[in-house]
Image (cartoon, rainbow, N blue to C red):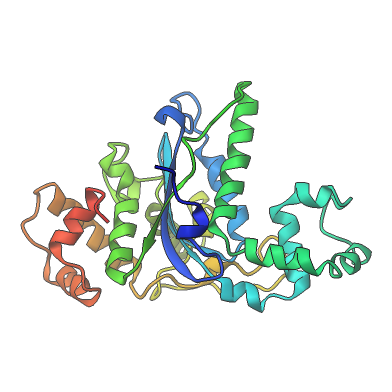
Length: 306
């Protein structure tokens, strides 16, 4: 049976929330082989792409042989961008495409005049900039090419195309984000959320601590690609068309739940799944009731039943 085309399961012109994950070929430990940890570079590329695409990153986890993302594509945001903004962002996303047109950096004023006449190209880039398939393609291709070059290897780096699961409710979103946040703990690579250093919730916790101490930390920089939780402090949008630090889709809050509330819920989910707790605490139970998430759903989520 042939697999469905991605266009049959995902429309970049329709807003949606998705759990995305991808594995290294043969599930080999190519992102962290014990001698060299390359996950920092994958995160750097993701940060760059999050500044360009109209796709918010709600959660992420990077393990030795695979990674998880929770993404929201925002076509309505692309529609608000001027044609100039679209071209500036597209140049950062697809520099090789622009190089074929003789443009090797941010377009000059003269080059922009020519680009703005290319109506078909502008339309194509508007579609691409809210397309998760294109964002994942650039993320995986750039990282794979760099690692293969470093290792002197050729051939496939990733195990086929990425997997994409649409998230259809707030309960499913919370369960999925918990599943992603606990990935390192369940893989035996960490023991607590605040020591799960390659998981987004850890970066958010450490970034908040850095903000309290007025010091910029590596964790705070790593958390830069993430959408804030709804009741936590959200950064003010920065409008600098197409340049580093410009307004990101991820400046949009992800859901109405504080970071502390989410951590309590994730911790309880882990304890329930491990048989260390019989039932949620009253505060966690109230959070679950608000998002219509049952205890069974919470436990099933950690088994990958999302």
